[in-house]
Image 1 (cartoon, chains in turn orange, yellow):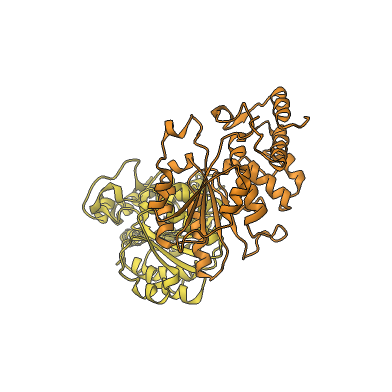
Image 2 (image 1 turned 60 degrees about the vertical axis):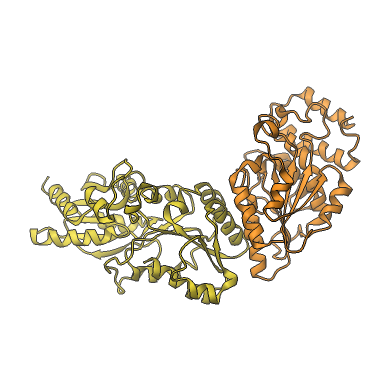
Length: 273
Length: 308
């Protein structure tokens, strides 16, 4: 079973995301299942945020730079009470606020509008610099994709984070080694990936991005090294938990998901449709 | 004008703790005092405009008012998507100070000419565009940038430009200033084409043609009320800009006039660069003269159109 290593909550969250998708019948489901545990651990254990006061000035900032993984974010925002759970049923609908990429100002708890790749890390650096100017202690977390790291702006930002010694900044890379066309090795190899981040001045940790205790341990140990910015490379599986989906670029963004496919996916997770 | 703009940053930083200055590998000149007295709010960053724009947006999302300065081409074209999404879509109070709008950097060749900056900034919702005509006007503009709610693109002219703005005509972002009254011709201008039009008006006066000059320092949001009021008095309306004719001041004015009830009541002409890369070297004036953005040509066109 592809999801044997996932605990009950991880399976339930995947089920809940399938529920959301049943309305829109489309979404970046493979990308979402890749980063689900990362976002879960961030909101369960790491981020200092207040759902009742989403603009609390002292809050930690979280930017989902790979905005297409937003289903996981929306689910957590609903679970934590930033948005009403009913809103999930309006995903991608005309009257809804939850689009295929998250939008600042529209969705409480979303810190920046993302979707075009390579923007989030720079925005996060600006936030971390503002915290430094104001002598605030909030931290900034930016979750990027691996394919996203093809964008030059990511490395412009990495240069800058190293220069400014932003230990309050953590970039988390969802390293599932797949992008739309195929594997990152085939499209644009990123290796030696951890060394790249180190050479830009980051303190780097690598972790299994689906192992909840391991993620809690790594993200609980920030900052890693003196005044260096932090990079957490999460080794993940695109479409994690679903036999048909894992490492299958067809499920990077899926539209027109059939009833039969939904039934199969629920069954694989051990839930009735 | 650049000097006035950058020196005014000191006062802004002094009066408002939200002010942050970010330069992209620009010259130290005129910034020493700002750097020395406000080191925590003074940033000289590398030559990575895309990153800087996102960084400025992140600061603005955290309550700051970032002023970003580099050469206009790199501030607009190079990082257009970051300007559009990070700054424009989020509707943040980031101030983009573009050095050398138009053909100021003529001797450096076409890679350094910002002939389309107004057009591409105009296409971004929320973006205001201001092109002062001289350093005195820059002095009046800068304090107002603290309170403007959204992003602003400030187009800097060459510097040393003749002072034609007037202390008795109050400056307000979004409100055009009429610098000359006249019944026959209306020149609508922005930046240093205002000086060109005022000279043209001087050339036309002895010929019995009186000209109004409407200085549209703010190209967006366009002051349509002032434009329509002035146009309703004129037989000929001529726009002049140091910019391509595709999507700049002339386009903005034409859009408003053609959709108004005044359409057809006057002759209309736009002066600016045609749809070409201006590849000539020399000076700003050389290039502007070649493409007819000169007092003599403005006067000639005005004379011609009033005759027809």
